[in-house]
Length: 503
Image (cartoon, rainbow, N blue to C red; front, side):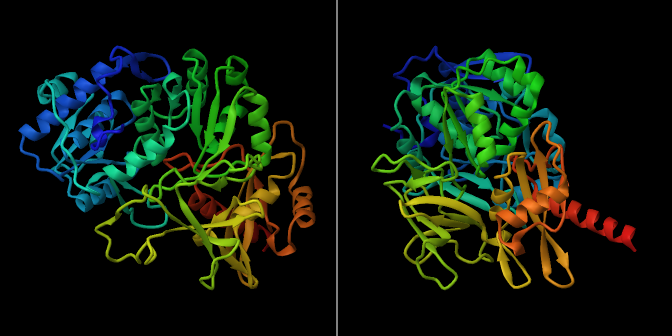
């Protein structure tokens, strides 16, 4: 039974000497037991209450991943306060905007990122043993019983398309997510590797699951290829979760891969963006003992959306799965009618409560309670769902609607293409036109003209990229997704340079 307060995930009735978290920086390890993690969380909760923080107050966390981070996150929620993890890769003014928006009264930070905070912000360096020790009030603590839909966490979106939005997540919603995921067998025996940042739903929700299942995690400060690969081998990790660029970078590092034993991996969950057929094939060959899952979820709508087919039909490679039995889904086309392709709308107990302090935004929910994801999906005759692209990524070229994801998947069917990213650039005749950046398989000798010719054969003529550039690696956002904004700027620069050369 998951406790009402999300901060009380650690069950005192289970073995407390078991390692909950192994902090790993690529060289040094630090094991933290469930007893130690729970004691620190309780000490933080007691200190916050004794210092006069009131129920519902927002408390920020600005730091790289660590067991201290997790304990503080739990302690904040235990005390009936709201934990606000903050992206430390944002510029100082954006961090300031988030702190003002949520009204944070205190920020727990690490020394490395304290300079991002405004000068007048009350802050505590938790990686300074003396400073943390003088703050914590050791002792037991009875978690505050939250009201129905009471907020536990604010997670701010990346703001790649504008001002970051504070997603309000209740104890109830996050507890439901954990309950659904705990139905999987054998979770207590898993050794989970987490390198994605805890200010992102992917890593934070997975850490909640690990603690609720009384499993163990290896927690890395940030993703780096060689330490990540070494961690799998060194700690015999059984469960990986990553976005496609992370896995692609790892598989491309021949030195790291040659020296690592990856046979311990049983589950590999790929989220945030679908993997290409080429990448999936390479993953299967690298992790022959692992179950590979193409997963989907949103900060607003939870990671519980799709699941296996109820009749046991195998999930096609590029599908996200069948509708989860506890989730309502529908696809809505441009005319507002339900269809087999359209914007995904979902309804479940795991939905956010709303966006904090954003009356300027259109309502993200329909009148009957569905969250409008903004993601375009298609559904086949067997009920399997496929990601098409973001509605706001779609652009018009010569009167034709182009979804970058469709063009990317077409390019990725070529055996020499590991990854593709398609973006629009302005065109005086078409309005906009598609161009592409591509990562090739090692040893490939294909050139741009050959790949353009392939695109014309494999897809609609209006979809083919008018320019293709090869990259060794893609620029990534703070959550390790491909940075489309950076690629769009690069495409504009390259196109302008090419035009200048021709004139």
